[in-house]
Length: 368
View 1 (spheres, rainbow, N blue to C red):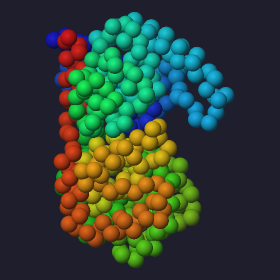
View 2 (cartoon, helix red, strand yellow; view 1 turned 135 degrees about the vertical axis):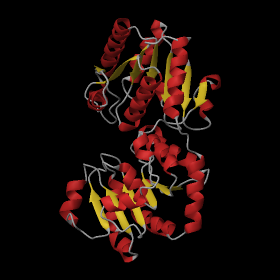
View 3 (cartoon, rainbow, N blue to C red; view 1 turned 90 degrees about the horizontal axis):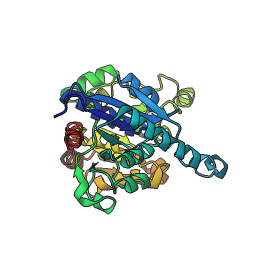
View 4 (tube, one colour; view 1 turned 60 degrees about the vertical axis):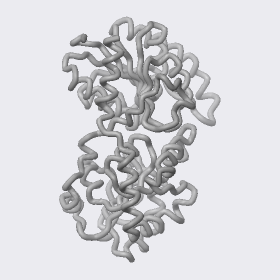
């Protein structure tokens, strides 16, 4: 076994791509401390900040996605794509990787395509239950495709698929014995029923409108809310309601201690990103998923349906959430038997140690 393999990890764009990429890198470093890792991202995207913060070197490609509804903005895309492939070819020539990993996002396509032209083996880590166009195309020449959901042979060659699950941030899912400390940190009563609402770091407008509209019903049942608004919505919510709206309501822009928020909650309301679902399966609490309609190929709905068909989550569509979400959450809180069923079933779908399994698969490519 090569004690200092060189590996490129490409992709990003959202936390859902970046967190798994960093988790895989960390696992590679644990298994082979001498390995040399290089990240490749897209200039101007969040990986260019998050990856160095995690302690890894990153190089940016000048690549962007298709801008929906704007022909003018897309005119330069073919030139960006060709330029990015050329830059990726040069990166591979300079770095001389033994293997390449693609986690999705703008930079993943040019880098994996360049790897295929150079004869470098590559692994795709597909987070969603519905594969995007780029990954479907690149999957034909991939050495291995690590997936998180069943029935992925509709997108990829079956012989190349390995169901590993999505890597998660271990500190976030470690909630055992933290219920009381979570309630204490958030200044909540640990004996009262609590709903956690999270729309990610940027926030989810539908979730915020739904909660704000129905706060009186929540408070009428003496239920507590941990309400993470996201940075786009926090100021507006605070201006309308005030920072100290009610002792039962904690309004937060961002949750720095996500593990404690998960631990304090009895029911969780969330979007249905693949990374979030991977965390929720390990958290093992009743979940209501409201898939975002603003994602490619509506993959969040498909992610959510993978849980719903196993009676492991409740699905509320975005259009009806403002009227039905809070009522469903309150109903769920008062149905102990159904909560227990959901918790048990979502726990069965958990795939721990995904980062380690994927890292070992990458190292097999190096060995090969």
